[in-house]
Image (cartoon, rainbow, N blue to C red; front, top):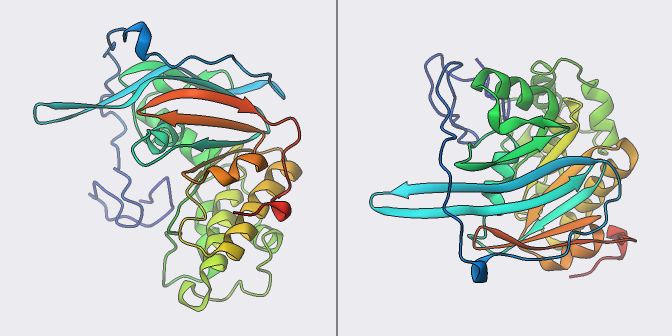
Length: 288
């Protein structure tokens, strides 16, 4: 049994993945999606003018809410969040810690459920899928890139990527993907023999090897130095431009905004602004 998020081999009765922390869901486990949040007062609603689209709508968040209960305390991780992302865009979801951006990414990746609203990806309402359907969605349509790489230490770079191809119906050749991210001469190296930037490149290659239509990146430069972080951002921007993959990056760094086609700004679980950059900056020209 393998984790459908990061590909790590799991024990037969494991409930959580030791590598990425993903909860292993049973195929028939029930999903809760019957909570309807009360309408918030008009003064608390986020308002903004819908921006122009650069292509067909690929992702649609419609009044999405996610509420956690901790004892007697209820926490609104998402509060009627609404935004669209066009197909083939590089979208940046920006916000401080606790803004709800990671929860939004997890919902979009089919890792977390919602308590209100719906999420559509390519016209398909993923918030209504069964757990079995979500497993198929994560395996074949979504690639995940994590902040701390989550590579298997006793496997080479090539073997880490090969694991992902075993989970997908239409994978790319691992050697070709590693060559695409500039690691053609490091395929036989183990993670401990690679720099942080090289490990993140392997992580991106592992995600791309699944040949996904959607690439989700959780603070992909958060553990990297300035120059290496720019290289990773450039790789993600190039991937979006050259393959047509829709790329979603979450970050707290507002300096990244000029490189994105679309910027979604979040605060307190709400989307308070969405803008479209008509001429996104090349990462090479970005400074922060």
